[in-house]
Length: 78
Image (cartoon, rainbow, N blue to C red; front, top):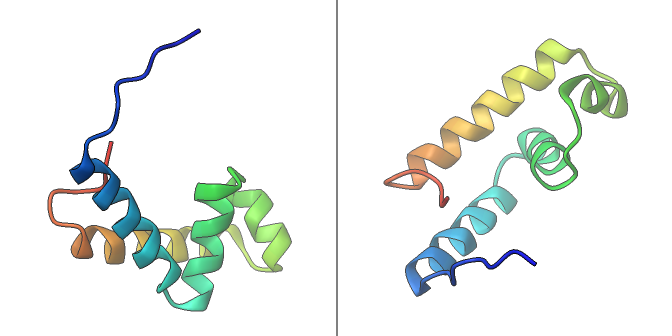
C-alpha cells in the first residue's frame, strides 16, 4: 500500500482551476485534451477517433497546452 502525501488546499485549488479551464477550451482543443489527459489515448488513436490527421491532433494538443499554461501562472499542479 502506497502512502500519498495529502494535497494542500492550494494544490486542490490549482487542480480545480486546471479542470475548469480545460472545460472552457474551444471544442476541438477540448476534445483532444479530454482524450489525451482523461482517457490516456495516444495521438494516433485520437486522430482515428476524430477522423483527422495526427498532425491536426498535435496542433490542437499544443494549442490546448499553451492556453492552459498561459492561464495557470506557475504551471500546472504536480
